[in-house]
Length: 379
Image 1 (cartoon, rainbow, N blue to C red):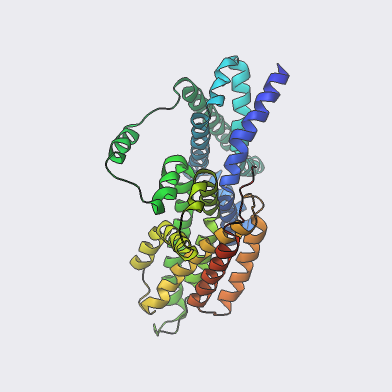
Image 2 (cartoon, helix red, strand yellow):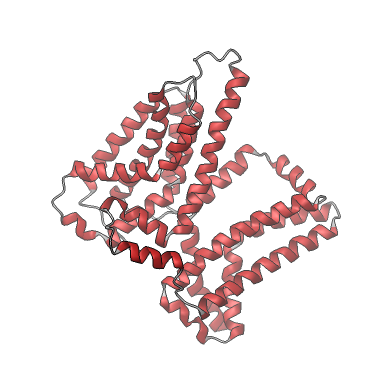
């Protein structure tokens, strides 16, 4: 029995757990960076101390853990529906199946369990027994709900929603342009990754734009037009780095599903323009938010430069993947280098249009030199 559970655990870890953390490494990294950068350790302790004495605040914590687990479980259910071999889990006995799925669910809940352990430890120090029971009971219910969702997915595989049926009818009459292939793939096959990335980077972007107005009123009381765009440039940097996993998905999608496109009579500059258009479309929500919160004391062309800088970062990351194939966990090294380097360049007041132009130039050189040499390597 133990051998069966171990074998099932190994399969589920490689098909559910590892892909989840690989595809969401960028978003989790940015979230951890924000949590550790804007809040000190003493702030986390103070907030947790207040939470274990207030049911309302503790409910907010539980809601965040529930939301994270919901997104992770939805990803795992999508993988079960994608790979038919996982549907054979029904052949195992319920005890073995629940043991394997329960272990995988605990691994997927790792970040939530880690922070819950921290809050529970604070509750024990404050001698708030009800908070310890509430935290443990909530996590147990969330974990059991995930198992129920897995069981339902195994008994009702590959459901066809009304939205999917409507989309199938629409695709009979409307053709998808090549530039929208990747976006359509993200929305259909990687919806969890796409929406989590856009939600995380969107909140960062909105916070930076709101902070610009607040910071401007505090520093520049007379509202003279001498306040630079470094703050918005740093926001564009975080947005660009936060899309690292989405860029990797575009790289993988093109290599695995569209290798024939390389044999098409398309010039390198047209290919590069296609990549720029795809990434610009991907950051269209950020552009709309920027126009909505447009700084009144900055020229329009300089403000758009911040958005162009974010688009150029996506193109640069794609070009670096063409040069050397890297898995998402191995990209953290050069992403960290890019983050530090561009942070210093922005703080030294280098124009954002200059940085964007340098990135576009580097991306064009990488595409021209390594596009034909790039090869996908199985992970």
